[in-house]
Amino acid sequence: PTVQELLQRKDNNSNNKWDFVVMNEHTQAPARQSTREELQSTLLQHYVPLITSNNPKATIIFVETAAYRLQGINNSQDLGTTSQFQQKVREGIQSYIQVLQHDNKTTTISAQMAPVGTAFLHVHNDNYELWEKLFDPWDNFHPSPTGTFLQGCVLYCTMFGTALPPTCPRTNEEIAALWKDARMMHPKKKGKDGVELPNVSEVEYLMNVAWDVCQMESSSSSVNYS
Image 1 (tube, rainbow, N blue to C red):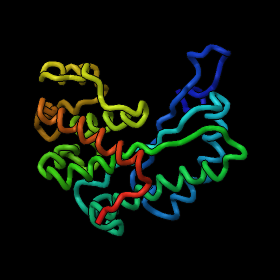
Image 2 (cartoon, helix red, strand yellow):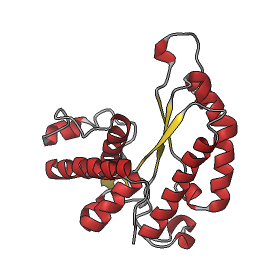
Image 3 (cartoon, rainbow, N blue to C red):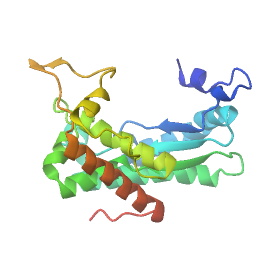
């Protein structure tokens, strides 16, 4: 289905109403001023009317995607180091939220940032080896299963304002079960089978990182990346 089809209310059934709409863009787009401004316009002209028609009280969750593992790949040379790239992405996401706030006379929806990239950067600074595992080893910019788990944790903490519940996976078997129905797991690439999943200690660590970063995000609108 298209975005419009997903957001279109077919009747008054509450099951067709979206309380949260999670959005993310190609990572470089919010990091550059030119594409940032284009996306601000698209957001107000196209997405806000669609979301408002579905639920005027909805909340947009903008995903702050992570800077790439390898500096300069995919024509990102001008975006600098990992921390510099991440800061630019963050500023872009903040600009989308500000545009919505300034447009509050015509829209009633709210917006939040899911600080996924900030969580990745925290791991980068605290556990570099694990940070490398957050990325697909074949392209070095899409998240791996470990990175996807961290992103999911950040989204949960952002949307519900609380830490991950005790029912989260606590064994290797429970962790593996999270991916049993995954749409794409790269079963074979470059002659290697399967992908690496996070282990129990990594899952525990990443859940704590997600909650710590989201708490910081909720208490302060600025983060120092220096």
